[in-house]
Amino acid sequence: MFSTVQPMPQMKQLQSNCSEVLTELLHSDVNLVIWQRDITSCISDYAAALSSFAGLQLVAEPDELNTVLQQRLPKAEGKAELIADLELLSQMLCCLMDCTAVGLRLKRLDKAMCPRFHTDHVAARLLVTYSGPGTEWHSGTSAHSQHSYQQIRHGDVAVLKGSGWYGNKDGAIWHRSPQTNQPRLLLSLDPVGE
Image 1 (tube, rainbow, N blue to C red):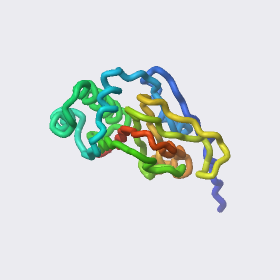
Image 2 (cartoon, rainbow, N blue to C red; image 1 turned 120 degrees about the vertical axis):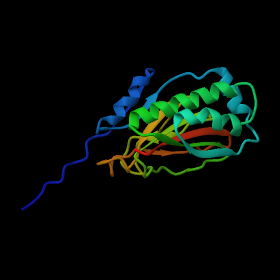
Image 3 (cartoon, rainbow, N blue to C red; image 1 turned 90 degrees about the horizontal axis):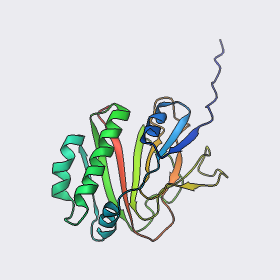
Image 4 (tube, rainbow, N blue to C red; image 1 turned 90 degrees about the vertical axis):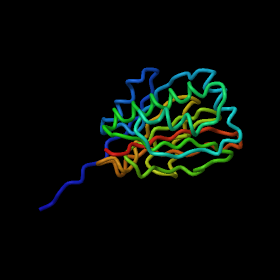
């Protein structure tokens, strides 16, 4: 008996200035959603001022974040606003992915962390660039695709579907760090405890 191989659906990438676009990731033919938003100058200024901040990495439930981040982030104008944004995004990811906690990584980068196009071996990953140029992505099916790339804007919330998403082994979004020497402050959130 022969079985037929189902072709991978053409994957879509969706952008909107409405946060509800994030729920579109749940569709099997969507591998990237971007909530286009403007962050406050208070958050931007705080992010840009973290010149000596190396970064932090932790796993926490959203309601634990305020306490942990108050202790671990440097004091400066805008700290409370950034923490509130990190809490909100963590809550949104937990709701979207039906998980109990997030793996949070906030890192200052002075060079490209992942300069080649690649996919992530996770179910999903939320990315926000708080300062500096944002992550680049393309809609092709390989690292060497001839598709032109696009860039996630500073402050926008992107959720990328990875190859660890059930049934999405070949449909993950291709992305990379921008080729720049300009400092960046990058947030990544991964769902934990699904």
